[in-house]
Amino acid sequence: MTKLLYLQASPRKSDSKSRQIATAYLDALTAANPHLEIDILDLWDTELPAFDGDKAAAKMNVIKGAGQDRAGQSAWDEIVAIAGRFTSADRYLIASPMWNSGIPYRLKHFIDLVHQPGILWSLDPRAGYRGLLTGKHATLALTSGVYADGVAEPAFGVDHHAAYLRMWLNQAGIQEVDELRFQPTMLTDNPTGDLAKALEDAEKLAAAHGYV
Image 1 (cartoon, rainbow, N blue to C red):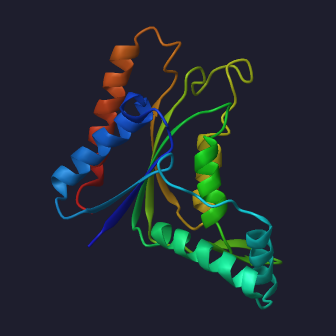
Image 2 (cartoon, helix red, strand yellow; image 1 turned 135 degrees about the horizontal axis):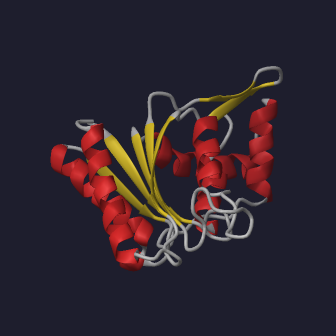
């Protein structure tokens, strides 16, 4: 059975435009695929441990191929458990607003926990990173209050939002990445119409993805 992990990065619940767009996509996708397994992870209702000194040391031990002491093993076991929820999915749906040209800190916190050596990537000193999550697919539902593709940067913001998420997913081995955008949400002359088009685009993308 195909499993989709839906990461919700906005704290605004049903008022979040990124969630609304992602939900429109997901509803259309599940209508065509009633057996699709859905795992919803609200990053604001989930307790995420700090990526502290023990976890950083454990990560470096993995990179160096060194053994773990008791604290390091405990820290690494916690990381492996959290990352397992991510790696077990076949598809990803990420709903994320743009915050200060980047992504919300709760999403960055989650990424910092799961993006680990031997789990999402390996590193060759000459060839660089090699992503370990092959054959997977991601869809991004992206919103921003002021920034829009093609606006004058940096006066209206800079895209460290989609660019960062794509870089992260690609580095992990996920090369198939689609985007749904509602940008801007505050400065558009027709917010209702533009949101309706974004929701329609979400349904069309789900139809294009077809059966999974």
